[in-house]
Image (tube, rainbow, N blue to C red; front, top):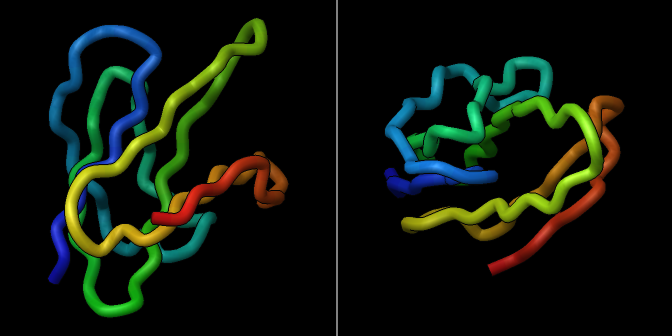
Length: 88
């Protein structure tokens, strides 16, 4: 198992949250709040999905991960199209 932390912040302090399995498909994504950091575990070649809502005027968001096992991050829109990605 490779532990990791994924955080999404607009402003404010991070608070811990936990992924809910299964979340290996986009339709099963764990909900995520901008005020909380999500914590999870990766096993082998596992993929985890998280979802969050962005409302109002366009904003710049920073998505970051800490920990082992996370080799890439992708941001998908509501239709599942990749709108941003990064590799480690």
